Length: 210
Image (cartoon, rainbow, N blue to C red; front, top):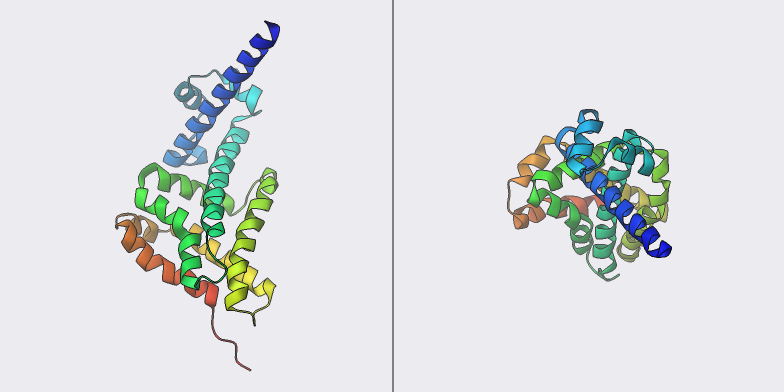
C-alpha cells in the first residue's frame, strides 16, 4: 500500500511538472522571458507557487527548462530526418532534411513559430545547463557530415562542420527575422522551394581553386 501511494505521488508530481513546463512554454512563446510572471504561469498550469520551487528551484530555471525541452524536441526531429538520408543523397536532399523541422514550424505559424523564435533567441547565449544537449548537436553534425564528405571530399572536416553551423545559424536567424513571418504566410511547398536551395548553397560553398 505504501509503495502504491509513493508511485501515485510520483505520478502526480510528474504531471504537475509537465503542466508547469507547458504553461511556461506557452507564455514564453507569447511574450518572451521578461513577460512571464509566476502568478500567471501557476494559474495556467493549475499549480501553486511552491510547485515551481519544488520542481525547478526558480521561475528562471523553469523557463530555461521549458526552452531546453523545446530545443531538444527540435533536435530530435532534425536527427530523425537526417538519419533517413542516404550517404549518397544529394546536397539538396540533405538540406531538405536539415530544414524540414523549421519548415514545419514556419508553415504552422502561431505558437509553433513563436516557440522556435524563443528557442533561437535564447540559443544565441545558452545557459550552462544546456551542455547535456551537446551530444544531440554533435549527432546532427555527424549525420550531415556523412553526406557532405561524400560530395565534398576535398573539403576538410572542420570546414564542413563550420558550414553546418552556419546553416543552423541561418535557420535561427530566419525564425527571428521579419522574413520568417513573411515565409510563414506561404504554403509549405513554397517555403521548401525557397529555403532548401539556400541551405544547400551554404553546405556546398564555392569551388576551391588551385
